[in-house]
Length: 232
Image (cartoon, rainbow, N blue to C red; front, side, top):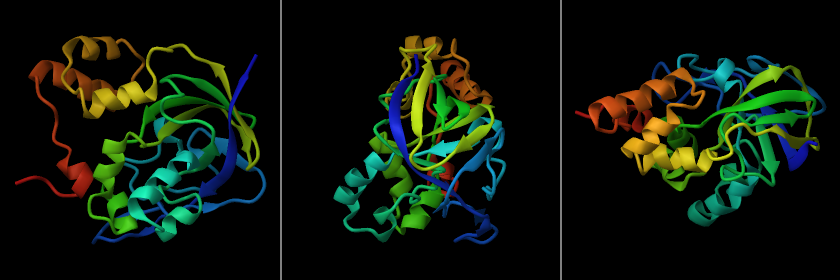
C-alpha cells in the first residue's frame, strides 16, 4: 500500500534567460503553474534549464524543494522577498510534509500520477547566491543540509497543486538523503562509508566523485561550484 508523505503546494517552471554574469543563462526563476502539468523523462512540460552541462537531463528531470524549509531561511535572512512564496530555490515541486531525512536514495514515489525515483540531492551552486543577492547563499544551503533533491521520471504522468506525494518502494532504507548529504559535505573521507555508498545505484558524477575520494584520500574543491570561480 502506498504511503502518503506530503502534499504538493505548487508546481513550477521557468524559461532560460540571461543571468547575472557575462555568458550565463538560467531558468532558476520558476513560477507556479495552474492546473495539471505533464511530467516526462526530461521534466515538466514548459520548463527549461540554462546550462544543460550541469542542470536537467534524465537524472535531474524534476527538482523538489520543501516549502517547510522556508521558515528556517526566513529566520536567517529575514523577510527576504523571494521567501514569500515557492520558487525561491528554482524548484519544480514544492511540498509540505517531507524533507531530506524522510526520503532515501532510490525511493520510488507517485507524484500525481507520474512515477518518479529519487536520483540525487542537489549540490547548490553560485546562482543561488546571485539570485538571493547573498554572497554565501550557496554555501549556506550546502552547510544547512536543506538542499532539496532531484527525481528521474520512470512513468510519465501529470501533477498539480493539491496532489499527494506517495511512497511506493524503498530499496535502500539505510541511505536517507540526509545521510548522503552528511557524507558529501561533512564526513567526506570516511573510507568504510565511501565503500558502502559505492554499492548503491549512484548517478555517474557521484560515483566518480566518491571513487576519486577513495583513491586520492582527499576532498575535491567546491570553489568553482559555490562561487563560480576557480581558486588561485
